[in-house]
Length: 319
Image (cartoon, rainbow, N blue to C red; front, side, top):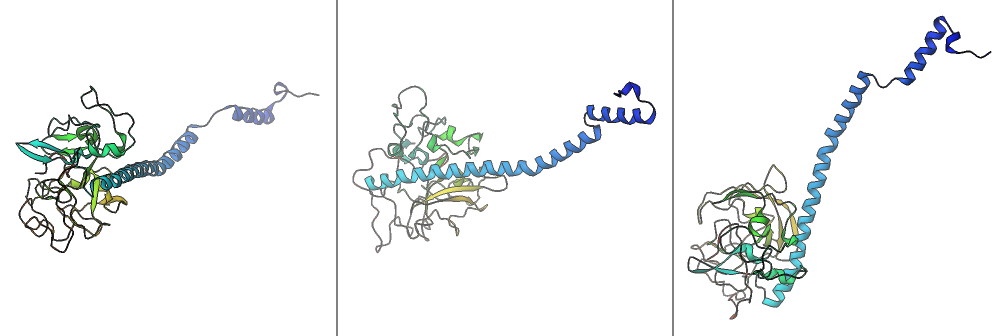
């Protein structure tokens, strides 16, 4: 005899009906809420880790681009006898070195020729594989991704205000060590007249190219004692950090910057020598603009590089 649900009665039919209906129904409201709660907990655990992984990947890419620039810089030094890439423009009737013009593309800043000097004339570009670079006179902007840090979040630029990208503004997310944190007048690796780098005591600590936050706490006024704050937190929101290429061509970072005008720390130094720039503004070495006699000379060559370039700056000039 074959039994069907219709032939069953009483508790037996009720139990079968309950089982059948339980199989056909979905989750209860309580079960759904439990699942949602579990997913929320997992997301709260995993999302910060994923965000940290993305930031770490950006940091690695930023360091890799600095390393590529280091390879190009070595070739540039071989050709120009340990001279940093330099580009000089006329600023107020004076021939001035502009730090961010060492490499990259045309920026949007209508000052210091930053929006005029592009990939063709920025000197370090010739030592990188950038493809067929058009003349700067051509319309449009030739992009140079190697000078664009994935960590570039812009900053609060003096005289301009907040910007979203230093690469867009200046043509590069990086700059060279052209002056210390007291201002453009206190030169470091590029003499005001151009030429070779000064003698360095600790090449492993002396940086030559770094991401733009390196000048985050530069003095509010040239030669002043009050540090500025350009709000450049590219590598995390808690502090200003920077990636650096050192003169021995190793890359370090992210390195946390002290919230002061500190030119030398245990991790890095702006200064080629410990007593550098202790004299009047614009004078390096012992204060009279010369190197100690026992150290190698640093006079500029009789013929400056045919395509000179940068000093360290975010929006100023080295005179």
